[in-house]
Image (cartoon, rainbow, N blue to C red; front, side, top):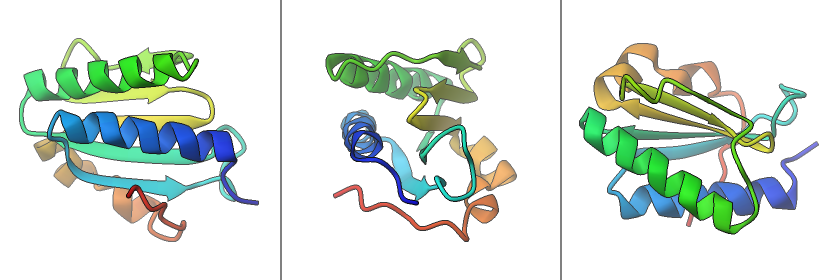
Length: 117
């Protein structure tokens, strides 16, 4: 099983929005074979809590234009690690220090990556 076309559309839109806010180290994993709850994990980093928040806002605005609203949102007050669950995709926006510490890429490295270009 692979990520749905809708999940890929949302992933690329979210990545473009994050890139517009100068997010770093964007990577997307197709986790559809591993998890039943979502198709894609998108990871992005920001260098400050303010940038993490700006990336979050940009992603939510971009996906809202495509008719997607987050079903769950966590961590937005701290500005260190924001999780946005859009059902088809889950977006992790992390402060770069948190990203290095938790290294989610290691956990999902056996899953295929998705081209964001």
